[in-house]
Amino acid sequence: MADDRRGSQHVRTDGGDAADTPRDEPATRTVAEEHTPSPMRRTIARRLHESYSEAVHVTATRVVDAEALFEAVDVAGDRHGVDLSLSDAVLAAVSATLDRHPSFNATFEDGTRRVYEEHNLGYGVDLEQGLVAPVLADVGPLSIAEIHRRRTALVDRVRAGDYDTADLRGGTFTVSNLGPLGVDSFTPIINPPQVAILGVNAVRERAVRPDDDGGAVAFRRHLPLDLSFDHRVVDGADAGRFLRTLATVIEEPDELFEG
Image 1: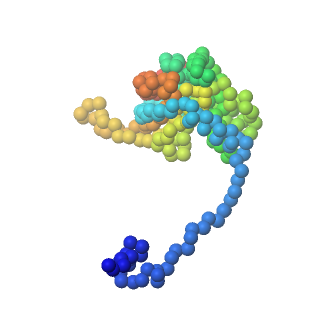
Image 2: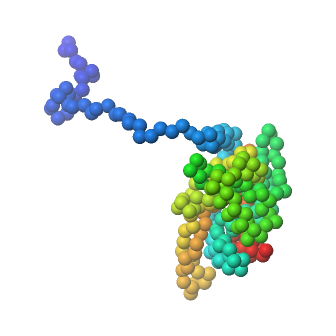
């Protein structure tokens, strides 16, 4: 019987000898930089791990027509003499929505859900060391101009490093805005022990059909929103109703600018 060793040899289909084929050099890795995470970065990593290990994250998305909101922001800014932003209006809209859906203004820890009267809204601020969410206390009674003043003062203080852990505690709901970075959608991570967080994305223009056959197509600004929630505490239908109310508040924003 012939000695068939084809199974143990590398067979060349081009007629050449495998032994003559040059081999690539093994991959090497040259370290460009090496960093030990800062205490803040380690704390952020620990809390994110805690959030994903314990909370059952689900994210629901809705795109909202924000044209009326932008127009109202401009009018209110002129009236109050301040440079109102979309963030101020979104914080006000979230607070108005929490009035109607208090189950999202809550925490869940040690097997107990606690629903709060105050709307203490965490607001994501991007620092070199990582993302932090200082808390705007009791937003509910504030006018849009007061929200603007409180938010800008808090963000300026945090970016200057003039804050401590007390500024990061006591939140009941969080808003994280990646829109200025051009992000169209993301999955916000819940800030434990809160039960929900709203992600705000980049504003995009969309063509809208006219109300009547003779009208022209209009381009209107739209705002994509991502709501992450803890499914142990609230259900998908609850999240859908929350986003529906939030959409109505944004699309019909008069009540946000009464004060």
